[in-house]
Length: 165
Image (cartoon, rainbow, N blue to C red; front, side, top):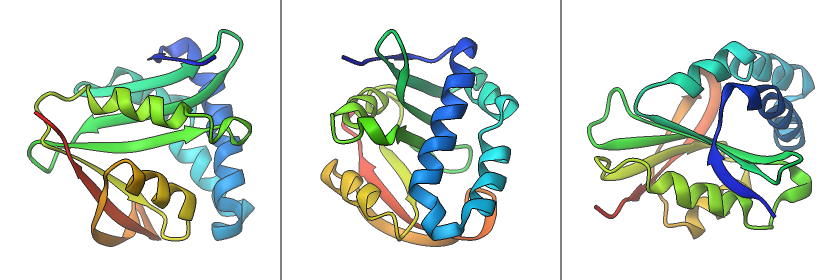
C-alpha cells in the first residue's frame, strides 16, 4: 500500500527515475525518444527537482510504500494568476497506474493551497488517459497553448477546476 507524503531531497533520485520511465512510456510515441530524453534531462534533472522541493508556496508529494516511490505530484501557486494553483506534475509509474495512486496524490494536492480558488493543469492533447483522469476529477477545458512549460512547439490543453474554499 502506498502512502502519500511530502517529498524530501533524499527522494529525488527515485523521483527522477520515475519521471524518466513514465515520460518514456507516455510521450515517446508523441515526441520521439530523443525529444523525451532532452526534456526529461532538463525538466527532471536533480537540480530542477531540488528547486521544486524547496520552492515556497508549493507542494511536492510522493506515494511511497516503504520500498519504492510509485508516484509523484508537484503543484505551486501561480506567479502570474491570482488565486490559482498550478499542477505542474502528476505521474505514476506505469506498473502502478489505475490503482488509485494518482487520485490519492491529487486529493492531497487539492487541499494544500487554502488561498487558491482554482487549480490549472496543462495536458498534451494526445494524452487521452491524462485528459480522462482530469475530467473525471472535475477539470474543464478553458483554453490551449502551443508552448507547454517553456517549450515552444509542445501543444497543451489547459484545464481548470474550481476549488472549494
